[in-house]
Image (tube, rainbow, N blue to C red; front, side):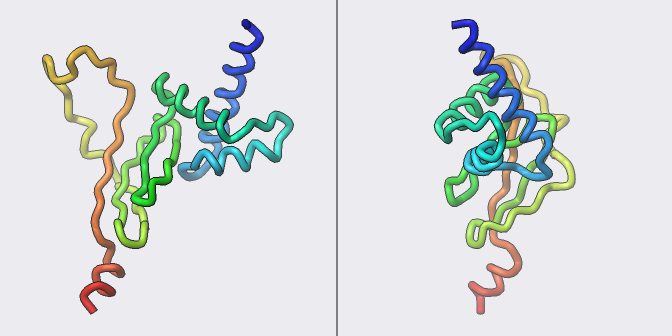
Length: 133
């Protein structure tokens, strides 16, 4: 059993390294494709299982696009987004407006806070023009 735990940790570390090397958020399928080319390939279900575990450890954050696709990034990459609900165009916000917000007293109700995500949804300029024209 200890060798399985070590292998699991190695795989998680491998996923975390790929996310840190990427210049953008990656889907589980993106990660699966990247790892499929390497010496330590893993199945898609294994990729998603380890991503969930990394998320539970507070090392990886996940956001969902309007299409339902999940994108992953290391938590130290503090990005927040504005996404068009029509075409899916996403803009990264320049700064996080939530950094100075603190949960006080019983608001957190015993939660250990690991990370946060912030997303705004709307219509981009092009989709507004197309819909009004």
